[in-house]
Image (cartoon, rainbow, N blue to C red; front, side):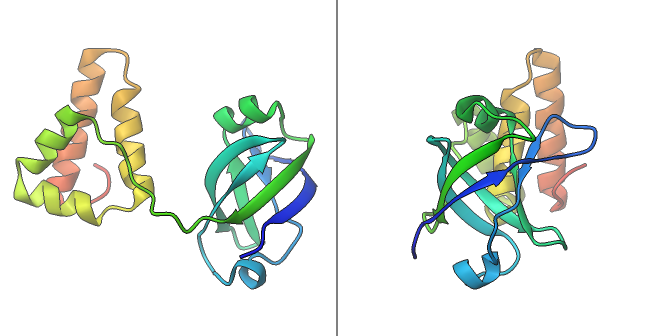
Length: 154
């Protein structure tokens, strides 16, 4: 599938420092996908891997803090984009201590394997970003309880 190269002004998101990219083309027609479309490319030369989501008013992509810092941009800026469909399998690097806990219980192992890449990534990020041990343990307990019950969160 061909790369899409374009310039676009980043939109703002009310009450947030996040920026939003709305491609100047019909995402479903170009990438032959509806709903969530995994993409990769560069913003001002900074590499990214993300997804375009159909938000009812067309597909959009959140430009998170890491992407904004790397691309040196913010909402309101015009950025140079190189984008293509990302067909590579997305996997989460699960820390050994979490992997061991998940694998120890057949129910949590099964639930974990059914979670999307994004949900797995968010669980790992929330736990690993905790600075206090108590917070980390609380987040692990919440995750394990949700996995045992077969739900995404609490």
